[in-house]
Amino acid sequence: MSHKGDFLTLLKSQNCHIQLGTDDLNSGSLPFGAAGDSGTHSLEVAEGTTVIAVRYQDGILIAGDRRATAGTSVMYDRAEKVLSIDDYSVLAISGSPAIAYEVARVLEHSFQYFRRSQLQELSVEGKLRMLSRLIRENLPMALQGIGGVIPILALYDMNHQEDENGGKIYFYDALGAHFENAAFAVSGSGSVWIRGILRYLDRWEGGPLAEMDLQKATRTVLRLLDTASEYDVATSGYNPKSRIFPTAKTITREGIRDLPEQQLDEIYTESVDVDYA
Amino acid sequence: MLDEPYRWIEAINDRRDYVEDQLRPGSPVVGLNYNEGMLLLTVGGGQRKIFEVHNRTALSAIGHPAYIEQLRMLATDTASVQGFQNSVDDVTLHRLANFVLGPAIKQAFEAIFGGAPIIKMLLAELGTLGRENQFISISYDGTVVTNRHAQLIGGTDAIENAMNQSLAASDSNDGSLNSTVRLALETWAVGRDLSLQENDETDRPETDESPADPAQIHEVLKTELNEGQIEAAVLDTTRRGNSKFRLLQPEEIENLTAGWL
Image 1: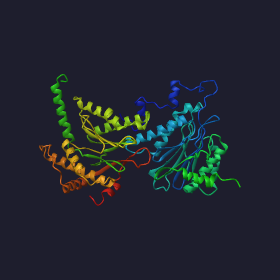
Image 2: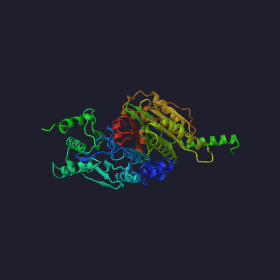
Image 3: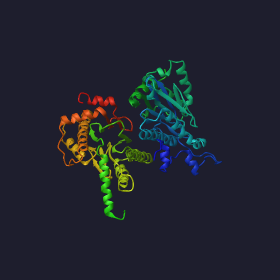
Image 4: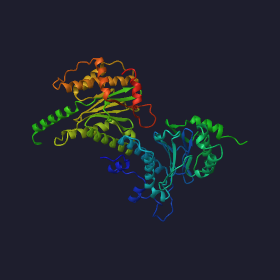
């Protein structure tokens, strides 16, 4: 049977349903404290994040802190919030990890299935719409205030090679609308503390972010994550005791690359974790 | 008719003859291991014959394009759903060949009132920790054959035997992609040469497996490449990301065969 490359249609035809908000709502298996329940929301879900994507001279640098929290509790300090979806796409997740990881997984399999079945890569617009669709399907959970996901999708558009930099950054709202930002995007509970700084840096201080080299871009991003951690308890900073660094990836014409810990360590030591005079 | 065993067997034999006649001119496919992965290679007339099925699994086939497409999608859909429902590590070629494709092809072949599956498939799976590389061929009657080092499919058993003999006699492969591509092309040409001869002499005995002359093989290759193009793909262990499949681009193939063809 032909599914025209649509992985969600394939799953439904095989009676395999993804567990985003819509299914839970229809099945009446809402968690305690969900919509329709007049009681208080007593279910604590792990959330709270700062993820950031900036355009630099070779592509996109995308990074995120490692902390997962539930209320005032730190649940996990090694969470991966910057996830490779295919060779040129990275999703940075914020919000409920359970839903966010499922969205990332469905997205990865959807892109792969399209390529394998239709013998061509899904277009950039197709990728954006796929993610919109998943976020929209999760709307019931987002409305209940327990399963919202607001991701950033960064990718390198190989069909625009005439452009010097094919890196693109898109951010979403809770209803699935996507917007492109030419310079940067932030998401998560700590993003409010650094969004204005990014605007300031891009507009006035040191020239456009897109002209930064990788070293400068990494330094900027790590400093911003550190700033977010200073004001947002749900964002972790560098933890020298356990040596937990933020996750950082680059997306360029050559594909996705994880920035090695050693490189992050050097930049932290030299430019972030500095003593006040 | 189904109540009459002899007529059923006769129908199956007729079906076998019919399918083999249809497959005879098919362009062979060669699967070989090399130092950094696995190679699938054929020469075709433009229609793609080598496909990515899953992260570490590739498929190629000869036969009617409609059957190839049907079974390719069956393999892709099954692997995709299994990989999503469980884990991508649970998608194995063994399960795909023996539990999905093999039975489906066998059932179609023996359903004598339906269309005969004009197809032979060659699948490759790149090994992981604890699992070796594996080639599997599936014949039009659903027979599954496994080989860890190399596997090929051709229009007839005689063609496959000749290609296997040529492959076994070769000692020129140093394991690089370069020499593996060349060996695969030579092996392909042995099969193609025999396929052309069989088409010219339909009464040629199938047991004739005399080794082909290297110069003649080279000539066959040159002639065939005037009209056809080399199609090759690798399952590359060095490739970043989950998916290890990569189609070799024309420029890369040209570089790999430069000064040799």
